[in-house]
Image (cartoon, rainbow over all chains, first blue to last red; front, side, top):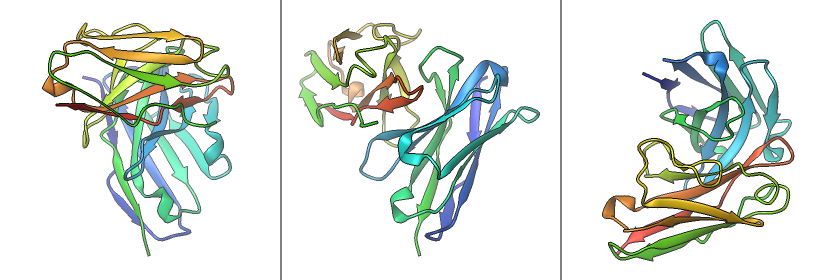
Length: 119
Length: 110
């Protein structure tokens, strides 16, 4: 069955970087784009970026430009999201989700990774 | 890109109908028919309830319906049931090749 399995919870110091992974299975990885979405405590869902797995095209939300990098490894059907210069505001649950290319909606989500930024 | 605007909370009694609005701009909702709605129970992964403004994925109850007019999309839940209590988010594709979520609406079944 379709699964997006994310890496485990992380605790980071302010100023550090994090790199999360999202391993896909049960479908053809390059037929679905991968999005990254986060939810900070007490806040709503926030879209961060997308990688088109068919050709590697990437778009980021303006709020994260210059601080986030999304990559993929098609050999392992895994997407990665790196976020740099962390602050306490980056404490959140980070989700990956898939989108059938050019369908414009997210039909399957990862379980989420809790990231805590604290000194 | 600012978040789409939703009411913070909407409530209704079992069996009633409620409607959640989602207001954007002519760079997102007003420009594309790529509005989707997600149901989010705390601690679980969000679930798509509506895509392409009005379409329900297989398995989603027909009590959920949606529409769009100008820069505002709406989600209606008919015959409200206790299990509908959750947070709901709209989402739209934008002219910047990005996506934006709404601010989220907490639905309470009284």
